[in-house]
Image (cartoon, rainbow, N blue to C red; front, side, top):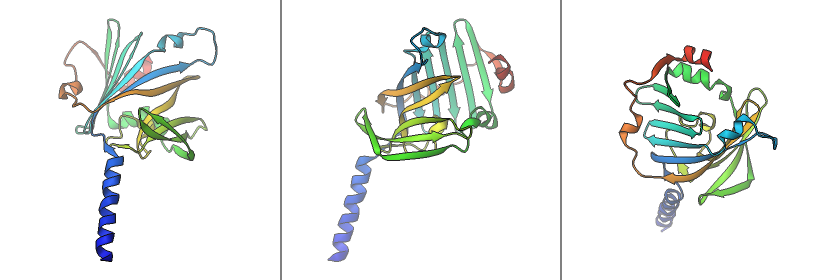
Length: 218
């Protein structure tokens, strides 16, 4: 009898865990972007306010597409081929930057050895998902805040390099642009299938550059 009760409790616990968590192996995360200049005076960065970022995920592939009044920048990461490509489209100027996994790591080196501290008492709800607060501390001493949910889980951690070590999906997070704070907040989540063509690399129409060349033009 005790074994039967234990088995029923175990099954109930597994079912509750499966209900609480949802695997996010394919779909799209839509983020609104707000830039805080720290002043009421208009600055160039203010023109980026209202920009959006869409993250398309399909298994080990992801495409992060940021659209602003200045243009569009897309980062395609194909984990099945160890291929990373950045597409920049600003008016008539179109650039394609090919990166190796080592280049990708170098581009995100400031997030290496990041340490997260969590506050169990701090929670907020975003789009119906309960989120926990984490503060990421970088090696240079700077920090940023992340609100993440464990209700969504994903095996693909490449699309959010800075938060890939958190046990969930970041629905709101901060980053910096020089001395400006940029906040990404999810506005919609879609679980609809993502067309494979979303991850196709253009065959023409772009000036092709490698990682070293792109750094000279930044």
